[in-house]
Length: 373
Image (cartoon, rainbow, N blue to C red; front, side, top):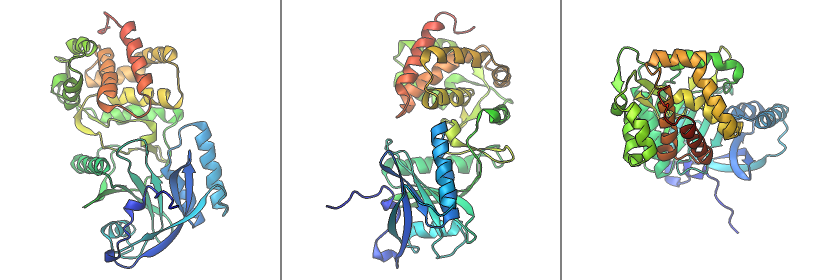
């Protein structure tokens, strides 16, 4: 019986018209029985490929650390030997080779398969130079939705002002039938931990355009929310507080969570995965998202406790400083409810949807009649 294809097979052309093939042996790591990581045979490069996995829970971080140590020692327990045929002369092959400045020579790579639970699953390819140093990350998609998301992210990164804090520079993009890809520099580092939180306020504050104000009703995220949930009585109540409110617009990432951020050894923050990015977006939504997604998806905080955390977050000094800069002091409660409505009605996440609904219901009840204070 023929085995199921690996999810990344569509990335690597096997059509002989693309030139001679190179058989590449690799090691497969599964997560919950699904193909998850392709590791090169070189021990140092295999260990470095684990940087593609932004482990969030303590258990996941320990497992990643143990596997990294084993790989550095040349041990490969828990992995499977696999191989695929890569054709360096294909468009994707040439694109990857250019990132390592290898010409037509196939570079050493590692591959991470993105979330298979979403229709837009994409793949991250870590590219190594001749000295086996990671130099670039290529994000690629082969399905219709994945190709669309890569296009959107490429367009955002191309349009973002140069040297915008935390926004990576686009190295290149590829669009061919059945595949789209973009390339970024490789950023060493880790997902932000509690001790890194002082870096959050300077980053998000730098994205606020304090030189002007716009009405909430003029922002595309609000327009999109109203188009899908405008009949909602609860959203209508929030709208009475927000639509005419003038606020300072901000660059908005749209999924500003710790697993989409790298903190360098020097403490610099780089934010990845910009497919929901807005150059003229809603302030504070990234601020809320950062704290709430971690609490709901990683810590699994019960809603009864999460409500108290929300109140503490809104009352914290960093939050007040950010709200003042963005011109939203006094509007933070309706903005947070609007953010939750947007998550539920527009984003419709594959994880955490029920918890988001429960939090919205609890906060609507708690703040009934006093959204402005």
